[in-house]
Image (tube, rainbow, N blue to C red; front, side, top):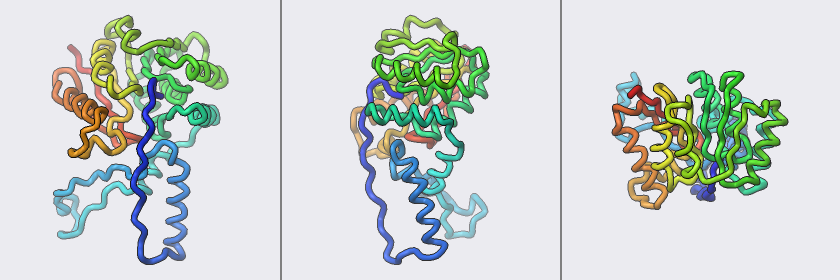
Length: 280
């Protein structure tokens, strides 16, 4: 969830084919359309294609002159909705949309659960509580006694998140919701005390959040930044919107700090930057 949300930009519609689909092709098209409709509230309709333009098809054993397929929209949507969502997460997602709050995608939620489990996370900081969609995903991967510290400037969405956690049976001693500006709250948290930091807030402050996360994470702790591909604009060198420039600079900074981070950029949801904190 973001502390301050930016409305997602509408993606260009797909190009219509000249020949109508029929039979199995029509059923596949309808299935893909349904998959996209399910995911549409949080997904750009032109997901990134993971195939570099100058790739040599022979490297993957393909016949010479045959292009290797990239990740098309149907495959991407299938991966995003691969894991089912628990009912309370679905209700939290619906509440977010009713409040004009953009929830994380199901693919991002699945990834958060996986990363929290892989890190054996017992102490997590979340910047951007929203209505609790991401918090539920984190709790699902954390150790049973793990504590989530979640920061959001909007106390109303945090009220909904608290109710969502209560409905999900999360003990109150595992939840620390802090209403306030994250860049005021984060400096007050303890150094090297957290296993995972998840950032889903105003991307104009992305660099500052990452700086704080660097201080907060223990060695081998995990940084996760949502919206790292920013509606497919980060990959467009011609785009110079403020958010795009800030995100690019943050990505470059993390990638360049070899002595601090081991990063990866994942085409999940609206893009996820994940990075493991090296020992000092």
